[in-house]
Length: 285
Image 1 (spheres, rainbow, N blue to C red):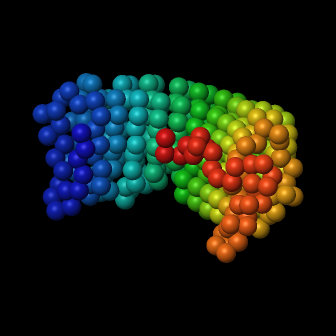
Image 2 (cartoon, rainbow, N blue to C red):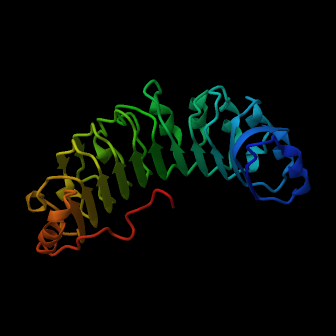
């Protein structure tokens, strides 16, 4: 079920008592709501999206059926005081999306069963708490800001995405993610260099989009199972790259429309497919 809009009135959470069998509920794009504690009475609820901009109850999370939730999305609210501490009791949680919520966020480190985490970091936040999420398979950093990801180290991480994160200039040595399969980095203007190596034996797909300062992608030749590289809006000559024999797809364009046909032909002359690999895009999966 999805409840959305309600711009001219207040959403009344009591209506949820009429749909007690609901398993997936989204209350989003709502300006104001009341009696949201009724969510806690949904005995079969496993997926919840809560997006109320004028969220009056800062302790609402403690009133939700957290132990039975497997997916939770908390959209942006006007208040920054929403207490995340109760989420440490969400032991069944597999996917978590936070938009602009940070109070007691370090408590989330106890979610050792979490598999996918999407949030927007901020410069003053120590990202080390993420390292305790030992089951994490996908980490997606969206918007927000931080200058470095070097403090994050996850042996089991398979997918890593950084999209429009302000100030990001350091990724750190990517070999600290030995299980990494896919990397997506988009709209990172201050990023200049990324280091890969032989320890990235699981790496299959690398995607850089609109990273104008990026001039050095080191160690790609040592990634023995790399299948695709997407590097858009770069002036780098693909013939200058040292690539592994496993590579099948190379999508490199400068963004100059008149040169696009010539650039694709140069890639094809290397015996590679000049387009995206079908398995490379993962952000919204």
